[in-house]
Image (cartoon, rainbow, N blue to C red; front, side, top):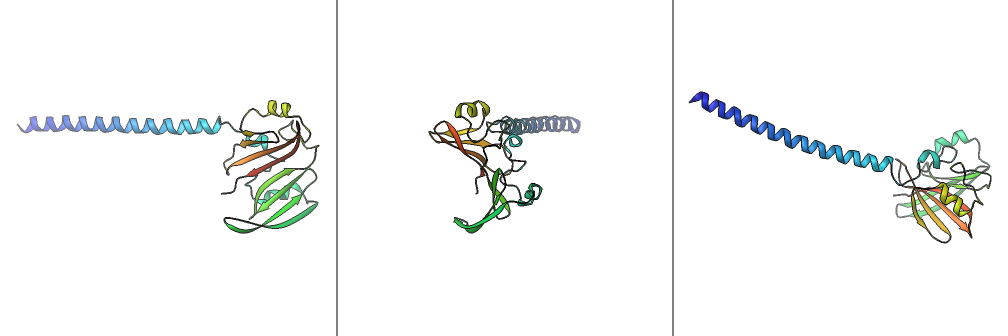
Length: 180
């Protein structure tokens, strides 16, 4: 009787362990699928590659210490602003071909100011809308008559390229981070 009881316990123990292992494997498969799906979205996302969209290696969200490699700016402007987090000071560093705005020691925006600066290797102020649309195939969030907005892949935060048009010509380009 005792050995029959032990065999029955052993059978039920193996059965429970197999069931638990099956549940464990199902949960693990679920997490693997979720992780792979997320990675697929991030790596093959509908956004512009960060390396392509950077301005001289700079991106909004980076610490202002990265400006050291840019050399001295031509001028520095300072202005006070206010948002739902309170009052802040914004400093704008003016370089030959672009301006960098810094808030709380982080780059908040980079505005292209020179028609000689190539962004994404082919886009510059004065480029026509159709050539820009051919160059930027990912990330379009919005396009209207005078503006377009594109998402840039970033692990820092929500970074966007804001393009302004006059007619069919690009007359403004700014890369910004969406502040929380």
